[in-house]
Image (cartoon, rainbow, N blue to C red; front, top):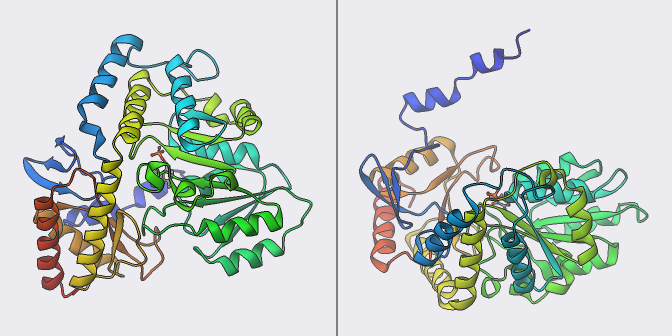
Length: 392
Ligand SMILES: Cc1ncc(COP(=O)(O)O)c(C=O)c1O
């Protein structure tokens, strides 16, 4: 049996391409944040994670340019060996201070943070407990660990309590949740989760990839609820509000030191290049200096949630700048995506099995730098497309 037989037989993507309904790997030729170009056509970007619009901020770009001059284009090695810059340590110190934790550790991507952190902490006989809607990188981190994986229904505190009550109290336990769920834009109810963690001796890790820069004055979900001291580990990425690439884990000194010396995705992978570290640091400074930006993205999100609801779209339980338009069918989701694209609006279709059948959706997301004209245009296009496909 040839290993490649499955590849020869794989035709899902080519069939979708042939039908004109293939929405992935779209090669943009330009992007100025809120506007992207595809084959010369302008699209209003409602599908990025650039929540604060900082990828094109002159200070962020200048910091990256200076760093390429100072450090070159790559570190060509891991943090563990030749790839640690003073800049990485400065970034770690400032992030730890910003989040209110002892210490932070910078990895090359957020994916690698979750792989390395979860797999290094959760040993044989430990439990790792996940919300069913946790990001794929959390699931993969749990799978890489030698512990037992337990999953509970999304944001269902009763189910969580039930699952925790059945666990062996003599075994170590790590619960990992997304702070802000990346597909449906709802928030983990930390004030309800934390008492359960205390009751059952569970350590809590929050993936704040989408919440930093957006919730809690930019500090994320724990700050949003005022529970920073009760969250053991806060994970984040630089690939969203921080306008760069890379990720971090923040927590107590001894825990971060342990991860630093055990996480394989940190030790056996090259560190983020100086320009990425410098861009993330510049973005952090803007976030700290300009709270209005954070207020603005939330204000735009509130308007969009209200308007979509008024028009008759189903936006689930979104409370944030990630707003799903739930369509509930693969083909209809793709047809809607295509019509929006042809009318100049870029959004991301999310199909089953990435979401359960019946929850297929268009993921829309907003930036502090979207103008009123742009978001009004987005709403006009959505109304036109929604009516023509009888979604509203
Ligand atoms: C919730 C969540 N965690 C982790 C990641 C991974 O981050 P990165 O893009 O830095 O690998 C993402 C990015 O898609 C995410 O949405």
